Length: 555
Picture 1 (cartoon, rainbow, N blue to C red):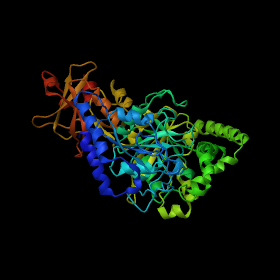
Picture 2: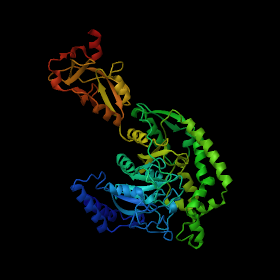
Picture 3: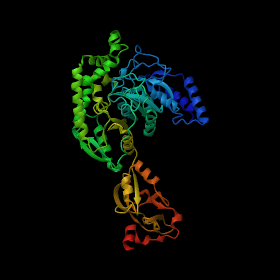
Picture 4: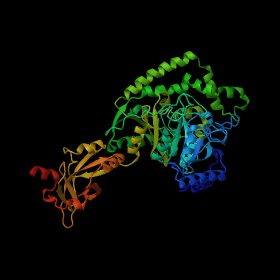
C-alpha cells in the first residue's frame, strides 16, 4: 500500500471507531497526505525508506514538530521546534505521524484515566480501562488506526496497556533509544517504547530508533546479549506470587507455561520476592522525588489548577516526593542494590523471567472508586524493571472472558533481541517434523535438530505409501519419497521445533533434501523430509528394510 493510501485509511478508521479520547492533537488529513505524497515520490525515485507506508501515533509527552507537547496538561503545553530523535528517525525511515495521543498526566499512572482530556477506554471493552500511562497510543494501535505508536515506560506504561489491549509492547533497555525531546517522568528510568500488532514490526521500529544522539547523556550504544541457546531456561514465579490475579488469569498463565517445553524452552520456578520488594520502592520510597524534580515546580506554581487541568491524584504523587531527603534516597538506593543482587541472583542460569504482564483489568468505575489502590495493583510485575536496568517485552497470550490476556518477558540489559526470539517461540505454534535418517537420535546430524530447539516427541511410522532410498552422501543419509505405486510404512521419529528454529533449520538444508507433507500411520499429516526425485536416480531402494536404522544395521 502506498503511503498516501495508508494515511487515508488511517483517517477513515478514526471516523469509524469514534474514539475521540485517544487524541490530544491530530494533524489535518491534508497535511499528512502531503507528507505521504513526498514519501511515495521518494520511494518511486529509488530512495530506500524501510518503514515507508506506515502510519504512527506519538504519546503526547514526546516532541513532534508542528504539534504541541502537553504531557496531559493544557497549562504545561509548549510548541517544539524539532522532532524528538525517536520521532525524527522514524520519519526518516518513511513513517507518517498523524497525531499525539492521550496519556496519564505527566506519565504518572498505569490506568489511562488520569487525564483532563478524558479517560481512554479499552479497545475491546469500553467499560474497562485502557491501561496507562501510554493509553492513547496502545488503543490507537489495537484498533488498527496506526501501525505503530510510541509510548514511554517508567513503571510499566509501555507494557500494561499492551497487555490490556492485546498488542505487543517493547520496553527496550534504558538508553538504547534517546529520550531527548521527552518530558521526563523519572529521567534516569524513562524509556521510549513501541506498540504494534506484530512483534517483528515493533522490533524493526525499535532498531530504527536505537543509538546515541549526542544530546541525551544517558543514551548508550547497543551491546547485544549472546544469541538464544538451543534450549533456553526461563524462570516463572512460584505459586504464592501468582495469587490475586483476575479470575481466569492464573489458569491462562499456567497454559502458557505448560506450552513452553513444546516450544523448546525449559522452565524453572523462582521465588521472586526480592524483585517484588524492589518494585515497591518506585513509589513507596525516595525514588518518587525524581518525579518531583521533573515537573514538581510547575505543579507547585499552579495550585489553583489542581482538580481542573491538573489531575489531583497525579499532583499528589508528584508533590509527595518533595518530602524525601537525600539521606532517604541513598538508603533506598542501597536497599534497591541489595534486593537486585538477591533477586537477579535467583534468576541465574535463566535467560528471562516470564510473568503475567499485570494482575487484573478493572472497570473505569473501579478505578474511579479507588484511584491509588487500583493503580498500585497494576504494576506488580512491571515496576522493578527500570529500577534494575532490565529489558522487557509484553506479548498477547490469548483471551479470558473475551478480553485480552498478556504475558511479559523480563531480561538482562541489552537482552532485547533475546527476548524477541523467546517471544517468537511463545506466539508462534511449534512445528512437528518427521525425520527418517541422519537426524534421528544417535545419528550424526541429530545435533542440528537439537541446536534448532528441537524436542523428541515419539517414534512413528508413515502410512504405507512411501519408498526409502540410500543416497550417496557424506555422511550417509536416506531419501524418503512418495511411492509411485504401492509403497510401505517407514519408521522414523517425530520432533517438535519452535517456529523460528524450524525456519532456520529448513533454510540450512542442503540439496537434494526438502520439507514436504508426510502422512503418518495414524492419519496425521506433519512436515517431513522428502527427497527431490532427481537425486533418487541410481540410488539404492532400501524400502524393504522398513527404516534407516534397520538398513544401517544390516549393511
